[in-house]
Amino acid sequence: GDKKLALERKDQAWVLADRGGYPAKPEAVRTLLVRLAEAQLVEPKTRKSDRFAMLELEDAGAKDTKSREVRLLDQQGGLLAQAIIGKKRLDAFGSSKSGTYVRWPEDAQAWLANTDVDISASVRDWVQPSLLDQDAAKIKSVTVEIPNEAPLRIERDAGAAARLLRVLCVEIGRAHV
Image (tube, rainbow, N blue to C red; front, side, top):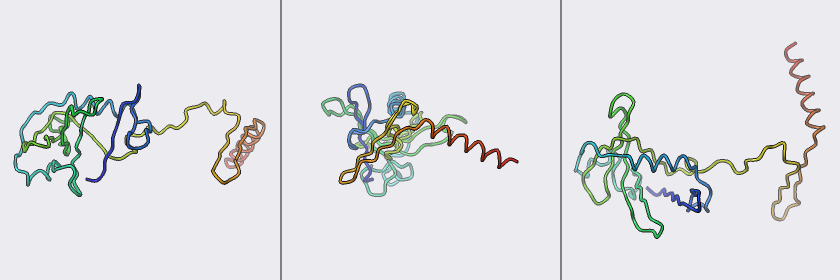
């Protein structure tokens, strides 16, 4: 449909290129690339375009489509591979192995591939959620600056933290008496 997401390799990390270069989850990108690389076309399916919607293989740019188009580009922007990814077929290859319907944009032949390719256009599925990975005990102060407002400075008070812990222990003790 109208949702798009671009992942790009920058230096030694993956980023969301169309979201200001925000870091992407490396394990999510790796899983997608490995599954695409290992996928094998196992069984031909329909060639009738009016049935593509049932397999979620309609043209990915169409309105209200559920299909996802994946394009792999080289460093110069040249097309390496492209596929339309459809819905999963649960238990396609036994009780614990799913398959995925796929086709190439210029080809009318739909296929069942032997892997579970799960692709989402939702940013939250790709974004690396941590902004700061730091041991809280090492942080002495934090300053928040908002334009046109006075800065807010928060400083650690070790004595206050200990007092709060004692109060919580007393209150918890009273609740169980």
